[in-house]
Amino acid sequence: MKNTTNAGFDTLCIRGGHTGESNRAHLTPVYATSTYTFDDMQQAIGVFKGDEKGYVYGRWGNPTITEAEEKIALLEAYKLKNSSGEPLQLKALLHSSGMSAIATMILSNIKSGQRIITHHSLYGGTHELLEKVLPGLGIDAVIVDFHDVNKVEDALKTDNNIALMYLETPANPTLQCIDLEALSTLGKSFGLTVCVDNTFATPYLQQPFKYDVDFVMHSTTKFLNGHGTAIGGVVVGRDIAKMNGIVTKTHRLMGGNSNAFDAFLLTNGLRTFGLRMERHCSNAAAVASFLAGHSAVSKVNYLGLSSHPDHKIAMRQMKNGGAMLSFELKGGFDAGVSFMNKLQMCTNAVSLGTCDTLVSHPASTTHMGVSREQRLVFHITDGLIRMSVGMENLEDIINDLEQAIT
Ligand SMILES: Cc1ncc(COP(=O)(O)O)c(C=O)c1O
Image (cartoon, rainbow, N blue to C red):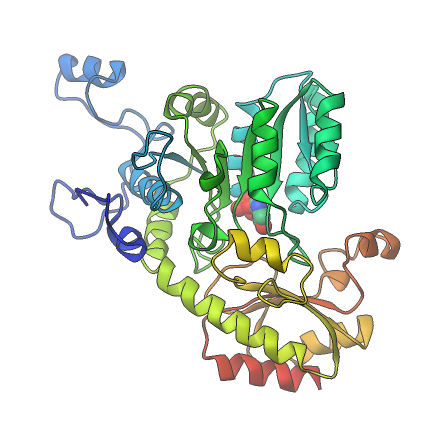
């Protein structure tokens, strides 16, 4: 697409990043090649120097990957302006997984002796990276309750080595939200690099770059791909020189590249992303209301419900309540297991963001190795069920839940 400046969100999903192809294939093909050829040495030198556009080696780039990267950058920047009032330009780097994207972002922004300030409700893998891997490199995490901005400020005042603020909102399992604007403003006033994992919300619901953050990361495995066909991740940044510099260096040298087939699947999924999100979210809102009125359910965690403690923050920074929810069955652990066993249509699987509804019972699966006391600290109660609401006909989802609950 030649001019994306005034294009709508769905148009960018479909056409953004697509530049045409030398054999006039309608869709950008899967460039299954590890390396690229040169016509002559002049061209080779031009490409190596960066004076001429072109690809050199598959770990450094691939046209199928470029299309997915440019589409995601356009979606995160949709309708946003830079400080001069011009359309915001972002750069995205596709990775082999969400974890790889997070690792690249952290390792290219922080060095030994510096610290990361973050909060409790992070994706488990990110939490483990901060607890079990980065301390070995001399990078420690300071964990603070990000609901209390004053506490964050106090922590920043007492520790000059904090260099990076790591945010994730909304987050598992009760969809806690933190205030992106307040936290980013605070982080920036202390000169921190501010980054956000936007996997749960996606750029359809929330654009963290609106609040001047430096980086956004995604597990593209989830809603961006949308069909559960590939693991992937992306780092998106606003400082293009930094993205082309140390972030690209880290990405290439740590070998975090994606591959052409996964990128093709991602691009194909992104073409219907806006439409998919509309249906995911409207179904989730209706499922949440159904569950909230059910006598066997003691609690529903859905950001679109005014009963959610973070409803107000969510409605300020998100377009709507989203597609994720969790709920507590009054019957506890046994009711959770029985519910899962009775499901006839919804899929019993971890992960999220696929077009089919995914349901899981953390107490008996993902968190079975965590003590009950520890689980309860993170609100993972015995009867908690997590749902990534899919795009099936609403009545089919509700009928399945109804028959499984009773
Ligand atoms: C919020 C969030 N961030 C990051 C990740 C890691 O992504 P991946 O599994 O693609 O490495 C996940 C995976 O579930 C996630 O839910």
